Length: 553
Image (tube, rainbow, N blue to C red; front, side, top):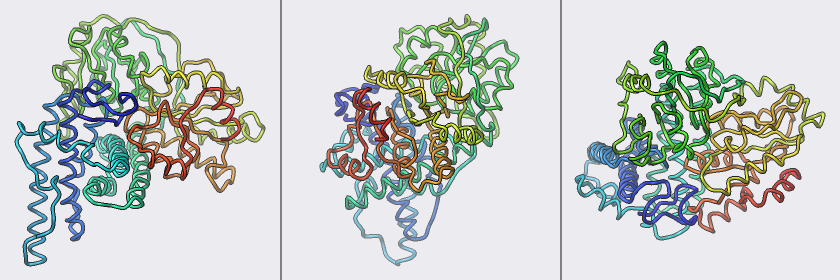
């Protein structure tokens, strides 16, 4: 195996034996084979498009398959084997469709050269062996490999947002079309400029996909509201729900109402507390714990069942105290952990097994008390625009610092906590994603009633941060988004953060600090391109970066 798609990859180079995330060699190889199969499907889909035969029948399968390879989503080889088998069947169908159409239009058989991903087929017993042959390192040129992987990793992140939107009934042909274009592009010998252009196009598609998900979430559950979220516990048994899937949250709350079982969020599900549709449930208590990497201790002390709706799942040890209380659903999987099946059309998922187990569990152990404030998505901040503009004009607010992204295990991430503590009292932090847990419980106060930490929500709600920046650009009448008093100090961990980064680059944002390390999949040459064009830079020391940020650099 060889994997370097996440920030914690071994020695910031790559995981060659077992993933730091916990995935084993067989899982990594099967993920590589699944991407290979998706490239084969996309090759023929693009050929059909060239013949004016448009279709979206494989789009959702491609999106879900890409999402299943995102860090800390699926560790179950059987699920990957199922996806690969279905993918090979789909590839044969689209191949046959292309060959028949080509013959009908050209009155002869297709004689063009086909890449291995378009030709290969095999049985499940052959999958892992083939996966070893088609991994990342099969692209020998380091710079070509880097650009291809930047693109693939970017669309993996986009696929997560596209899948969440699709679950809520929102789809866009253009998103699926680009997934096909991006995957098929890796079978061609493109120039550097062509590959860079595709990476930039991924940024546009990332913006469009986050906008689509924002529309889906707000149509279904209302615009997030400024909310004080309880972080304590009550004396009832509870269910802890983690991940990003708001429809799972909705259905769980409905099914637990009146059962005597409370519901708490964990990790990236915290922003569910901000949505009006969920506030009507009296048994929705608040948030328990912190970021994903603390789940081993926090899941143990919670005492009740835990539902993982998406990443980040930390592989549980079989002798851990919560193994028999852990449930996965959707694309999440881990062998031996109970899985809640997908909803059938027109019906809800059945959470009765979790609810019945919860009734027999003791209440959660209290690990903290108090409240945290969030819900500053674009609709709320724009409603406060006059107040914010006045604070900037009066000098009460000197600078906004975007510190969104991911949290993780590395001690070096304490940088973000220390930076938040040291930022002057006339600065405001804009955040989204689980990076917030590094500072969202600090007593940073407010500026003329405006909290100094404005949490927009989940990582996909980075879209709100972009909308806020664009609104400020309009209000202040500046021509360039980089002329605003906004600095970007982004923490990344997995592929969705890469999608957000590409979105910011597409919007023209420059001088982004990225940490705690730069991605291992960026070759020196590709990194230089990003530095030259966008002035991307690694984080430095807290004191040096603080001086630079306050100076607008």
